[in-house]
Image (cartoon, rainbow, N blue to C red; front, side, top):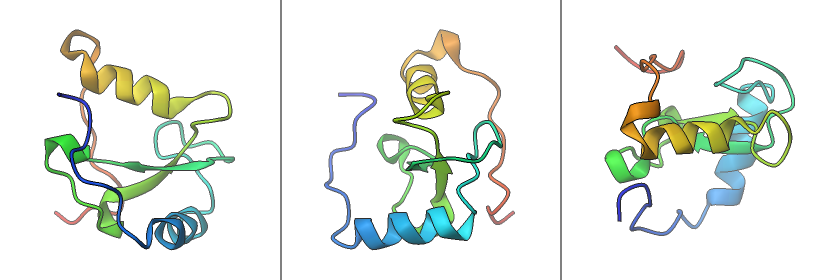
Length: 92
């Protein structure tokens, strides 16, 4: 089904998540505000994005403004998509 990953998260997900949140100071990659409480796949896993730390960034999910929910809805519905931007940590 489009919009969902087919593989489970890696075994070290809790460690990787904590590292990414600390690495970026909890700044949400979607809205650039502090307080991110989750980690997002910049390129979604269902679109071939990896679990590599270079493809992960902090994002608000369980706390307002719920950027992860908005991003996921936009990715699932092509008519709602905004232009894509390159993650600041991505390699050219």
